[in-house]
Image 1 (tube, one colour):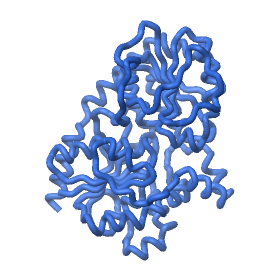
Image 2: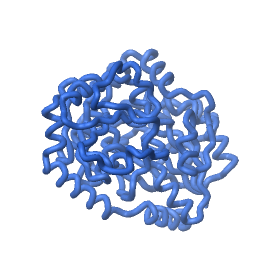
Image 3: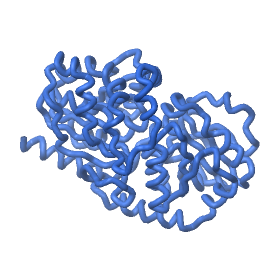
Length: 383
């Protein structure tokens, strides 16, 4: 069986697909990834990848969408409602997906997959499956519900749907949630999958091999898009608070330039390039981050508490922050309001670790990627 994985080029979106891709390859199936801008994210996971849109820039696209539609720009930065429906953000998703369509359809026509797997904002994945008439699987990103996102996005791409003969977008054969049941506020759209998160590869230096005597805390903004698009504005107040805490802090920002932060306090240092969170977190006592679901789950797997530093520009941070806080696995606060006292509580509050351990056990009991791949293989065989 041939399985095509498709994602918009954001690290957290791509990485959430990797465990299932590995499971299909381990079971003997052919796997291919259609991606743009950062094909090395998939290639670094040992997966074959096609760059379907050379020259793609997610940040440039996002900026143009907001500039071209000031009315939409106002709603983009507003909080999502209690239903967590991302359908109103379809204009942005259409912007991200449009450049991906021609190259992806070329891959689809040449490679002829039997199954298409895409993440929640990649409408081109739903379009590809519809064009071929093959089943599709959607991997959700975390705290949001899809609603009519793909139908609305496809409507904004109607010229491409007509050009490539894409019919109406059907419901995927399976939807896989990213967060476990106890963390979801909205009604689940599909089933659940456990297993370890994938957060990139990297060469580990001596600093990450053992847990230090003094507490170590990670400060992160995820895989790069958040830092490049929203900037590093959430970090200075957190770093200021960190300077007053008896702990060491590691800035894990991938390959983002940190020079704009100026001189760092003695107890704050940048990591050298990309460091896999799964390994880094196991040597740390806590993590402060922007609210990415992959970061949340990597912290759960490592058994450490977390704090979501809310960014008023990024509604995802507010939603995931609520999930983290209400499940009791961490704290949340606007970045500019984070204090040394809050960071000390993050290190000392045992109830946060207890709740984190409970969620860790919950995730361990969910179907593994191997089990999900086997179920999907059977589904395709029956069709």
